[in-house]
Image (cartoon, rainbow, N blue to C red):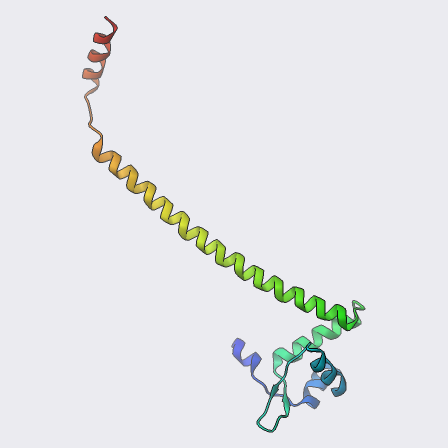
Length: 136
């Protein structure tokens, strides 16, 4: 399934409440608290996506299984958002480091190539003769 399909607003509040096994009033309260932000139709009807329903189920798991209150849920969601942003930044920095490392390797290779042009090969016999002559 295309990720955009999961964001497409499809369900009215009654269907979203049923899918998430919550009361519609709970969904309204979560919206007021900023935990969920459903889309609105042209007539201002709340429309929920599959992604919204997944988030509602996640909130229910945090409150039910882990015993968090809504303030705790808000904090968990904030921290998860911050973590996603940091992970994205780390990936961006890794890409920059890889690009800089490749650039550095290219520069080193260019320097090595320039040395090769400047090196003059001397036959081994000639080096031995010169070394012997210096000792005298």
